[in-house]
Length: 311
Length: 323
Image (cartoon, rainbow over all chains, first blue to last red):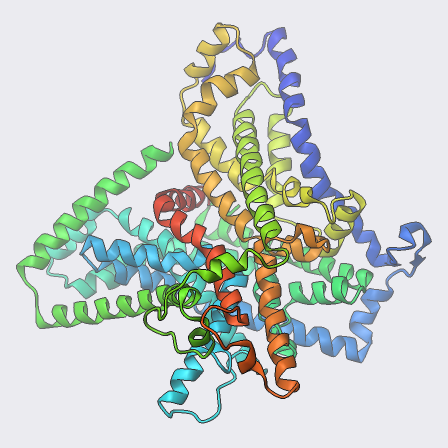
C-alpha cells in the first residue's frame, strides 16, 4: 500500500494527468486499430465502392441483410458456410479431451529425459505457421508425396490417394486432424501444470487406502483437471464462430472449397477476393455481435456455476 | 506473485514424483509393466509424428535434387550437398523477403516489448488520471473485433496498406501482454518506486532505471511470444500487401508452393516434361526450392524453441492464472 496522503497531495493530482499523457500515444493506436473500425459497420448499409468512397456510394439500407435471408442462392451458400464453421468447431470441442488425456498419460512416464523430450517435440508444431503446416502436408500427402509413394511401393493402393484435393465432409475431419497435430502437445501443457499443482496428500492417502495407479488417475488426477477443462471448454463455445482463416485459406483449393469455407474465410473470399465489401462487412458484423453475445452468455454461466467469471 | 504461485507447485510436483517412484519401485505388477510399455510406445509414435516432418524437410533440402524430386529421400540424406542454400538466395525476391521478415521480427518485437512493459507498469500507477477506465478500455479490445473488412478499410485509409508499418503498428499494444506485465509489476515491492521518487526521479525515469531492469523474466516471455508471432505472420501480408518488395518469407513460401504446383501442372499439360526440370543432383527443382525455403523458415523456430521453452510455458501458466 502506498503511504496514505502521498497520493492526495496537489502534486499527486498533477502528476496523474502527466502519467495519462504518457500513455496517450498508445491509446491512440488502440483507438485506431480496435475502435475506429467499428465505425466501418456503416459500410454494411451502403453499396460501398472503394473508388467512390463512402460519400459517393449508394445508400441501400438493410439490402445486404435482407439478401442473406431472402436470396435462395445466397442462403444456400451461407448455410453451407455456417455448417462448415459449426462442424469444424464441434469437432474441435469433441476432441478437446485429448490434451487432458495426453497430460494424464505423460504424467505416468517417470523418466525425466523422455518426458521432457516428448514435451519439447510435441509442442514444436504449435510454433510453426500454417503455411509451413501446409508445406508439410503438401510434401507428405500430395499424389506424389511420401505417403502415397510408400502406399504404392507396398502395393496397398494402385492410384494415389487424394488426401488434399478431394471435397466432401471429410475435409472437416482432415482439418481437425491437422489442428490436433499442431495443438495437442501445447494444449496439454496447461494440464501438466495443473497436475503438478495437485496436493500430493491426495495421492498419498489414496495409496494408503490401496488405490491402484489407474484408480489414482481415474479418481484423483482427472477430477482435479475438470475445472480447468471446463473453463477452456466454455471459452471454445464462445469462439464457436471464430475459426480464424489462415488454416483454411492455405488448405483451400478448387476441390475442397465447398466444405472448407468457414465464416472467416468466406468473409475474406467475398470481401477481398470478390470485392463485395459491403456484404462481407454485414456478415462480419453479424458474426462479431453473435460472438460477443456468446462470450457474455458463457461468462454469465461460469459466474453462476463456479462463482467466478471467465474474463 | 507469479513466482510465489509457481514455487510451491513445483515443490509439490517433486514430492509427488519422489513419492510415486518409491511406491512404483516397490510393486510393479504385470499390468503396470504392460501399461508402461504401451504408454511409452504411444508417446514414441507421437514424437515421431511431430518430429519426422521436420526431419523430412531437412534431409530433402540437402539431398541430391533429382532423388528428392523423385521422392526417394525418406530416412537419411542421400548425395549431400548445400548448393540449394546458395542458389535459393539467388531467387528473385528471396533476399528481400528475408530482410523484411527479419526486420519486422526485430522491430516488431522491440516495439511490443517496450510498449507492453511501459503500459503494464503505468497501469499499476494509482495516481494516473482515470486509470481503471483506460485499463478496461485497453483490455476489452481482446474480446471484440469489428471484422476483417472494416479493419482493412481503416488500414487503407490510414495509408498502411503496402507499407512496412502495417507489420509493426497494429502489434504494438497487445492487451494480453499488458495483463502479464501488470500482474508481474504488482508483485514487485512498491518501495523500489518510492525510493527512486525520493531521489527525484520522474515516472519515466522510474520505469527505465528501476523497473525495466527488474522485469527481464516477464519481458523475455513477451519477447519470445511476440517474435514467434511476427516471424510466422502470414495473414497481414495476404490482406494488406500487394507490393512484392514487402513480401515476407512466409508469404513467399506460400507463393512458391502454389506457383510450383501450377508449374508442374503446366509442364504436365505441355506433354509431361517434369523429368526434364529435374535431371541433375544440384540443379533447382520445384521440390528443392520449396524444401529449402521451408527449412530456412522453420530453422529459427527449431533452434529458438527448446532454448526458450520455459518462457513459453511460463507465459501460458501466467495467462491461466488470470483466466
